[in-house]
Image (cartoon, rainbow, N blue to C red):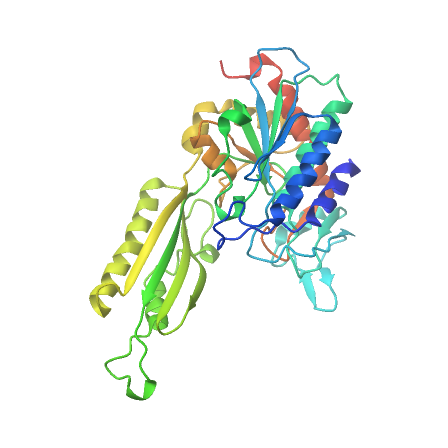
Length: 412
């Protein structure tokens, strides 16, 4: 099982930060560096049909050793890391956790404190992979890639474990909401799939947010401040007013579970023009539509106050709650539960407070629930992942593949 750790540490050494600002696909060329590494590795493993297309999608096949007639199963993970925190020059280390705070950077006085992250205490006595506090770790989702490939390697080395045809897919740009933009479901060829992109040990997720991105542009008028009375229109102040009109209780730091939010990602501007970028999230579709309506109404109000065309906005839906599609194929969730229980892992079914490639794929005709990688505190410098959770994720993937080879487990 040390292979999964070796793989993971090797993958995180490759910077793959994606970008909201880029119009190219993938949004950053560095993601292709990892794509080429994965292509070569899968070819060396002896997988069939290994491809890397012009958009950066890497796919491969492990042929069935259980005969014909079984549905084709897919496992999917994404190569990019979040632009929220730097993913360059990641310096991971493995610590033996004995309880209390973990000092990850003594010089900068950076530590992971269980008072802030109480779930840390569940891992006393275990080995944890952490960063040096200056970057994220990249377990989201390079842990998923390492776990999938290690599971496939295990199946190859243990041919007595029966499985149907398995398709692997590694995608770019998931973190910026574009991971399936050019994903060819027909070419992938799976009937069902799982993303390995979840958090703590035992997580199974088949509900996501409905999601939208909004860009708000505020136009101002700059006049010398000495003679600005009645003339200046400061777009920065109007932008602040726009944000203040959103409900303060509906932000990420004040919500949990299925509660939605408005999240201000960035604000950039001057007196003449200010741009705010938001993401809107809500599990319930009716509430989702109300949130989008609210943000439009705020723009209308500020235009009536400061003049037409002061505030303009564009809202684009990103993905929808995949629960609608997965509920039609709940045997996928049941198989994941049984796989975990057979390995003495307690399944934890929970809604995703975020999104996965599986959300869009499910609406594209490929039902794709999400299972755990084992990681915690994604998208930040306090990210960590227990070694044992990664090892167990490998065996869960193996077990799911095995259960799929038994026709009585599958939807007719």
